[in-house]
Image (cartoon, rainbow over all chains, first blue to last red; front, side, top):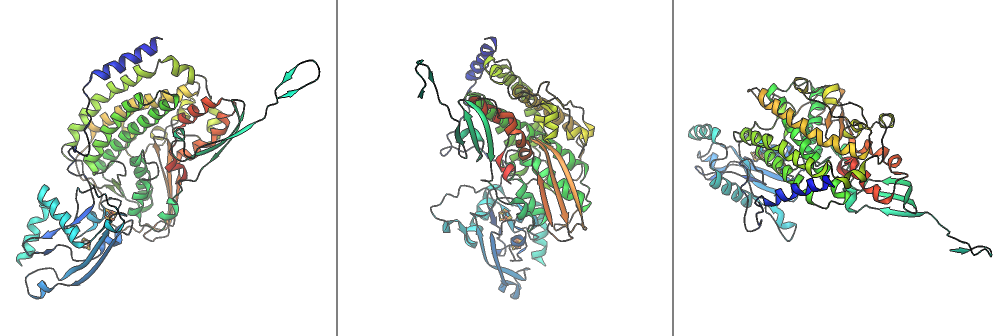
Length: 164
Length: 376
Ligand code: SF4
Ligand code: SF4
């Protein structure tokens, strides 16, 4: 009997603490800085082109094979406006297969991809979960607007390269 | 019912009943099925049936690079992903001969011990839930697990499938806000464990339901290769952190809680005490952690020399081992996983036979198995 009473005392003590429930869809808890949602592509605002050069390294390292990337010659390079010889032609990410592991971001040599915090991707069809290049760029833009530049430490390097 | 001769004596004709428990049953912790034969209320035969969650992780690992396999290990025991990550990267490092920097080893130890606390919280919570104490203790334990998951979110951005460890270190250094949050949690946690104890340890109902129920003798446990808290509850002080120290465990001072009889109550107590020891280890690691790099310089694609390696860790459920064979390509030639839950299940039949239906669920709950790991 003593044990049960002891347990009850604990329960009552806990009951007196204030509850911490947050009504989820209406209110969101703050996310950690590093919280990983689905990946998004970054946009080089200065040159007005994508930072992604379509090298496919991310697609090769992705454990679930969920990216489809193609590459083309960069017209702006021919005009001398950009330092990127090649440019991404098409980039599709199958969000329904992405397992949010962050490996693509780790292997990208051009700092062109970032784990955004977008994670609420409810959709009524599977096709709606295929993110095309524009969506991915929009996701990346949204991330940079909220969190500042995704790779601040490499910002200066990028600028130098552009200046050359 | 048969009427016998004229003596007006009634005898009951009984026959054994076969009952199917699972695969979808709240007490089976995943998709696990038991074909149980009852004589009245007493279990006379039990046949475990599994494989419903089989995803072929070992085979999939053969066509993925060494780094990509880390994401597969997350999904083995999904309540203790960090420990799985750790076991795998240790095996891969052994194979490739990569030495992680000191700081990385400390970070990994902190993560593995936090994971142990979280996993035991779930193990105990669901065990108590199976006993009939619906939700209250479970919710208390969920509360603390939630805090640990928040800590993990700070370091690696994910809450369940972390993929945090990498061959040669970890994927990112501890962020600034992590240490204060960890200190706060570690100072709070012993109080919460006291709370669980006050709630449960002396509870008469719990004791009468678990004391001297399903005794697993040390001899039987060793024979069946049972590891982890289940083995220690039987009185065998076998813990890989002490008996074959990996990472930096030999630098910490901690005890191995062992049980005395090996009954269901001991299995419960051992897990409770282990949480306290884990808190101690994290505390020491926090004080000793050096600064420096968090990741060794290793290429993204490793080609380990031809050979094989086995590495094991003390995962929350027991000895988790990875056996890797390399043929000098970018993917393992063979990846064998020694899953503790699967091997612990071998004593399930012996333990449950002779006990009643109501005990079956409790005994099974005290195993703390995870189907993701059993079926792989
Ligand atoms: S995101 Fe990076 S790795 Fe992927 S194709 Fe573009 S530049 Fe290459
Ligand atoms: S986060 Fe992982 S699964 Fe998703 S696209 Fe990147 S590499 Fe692939």
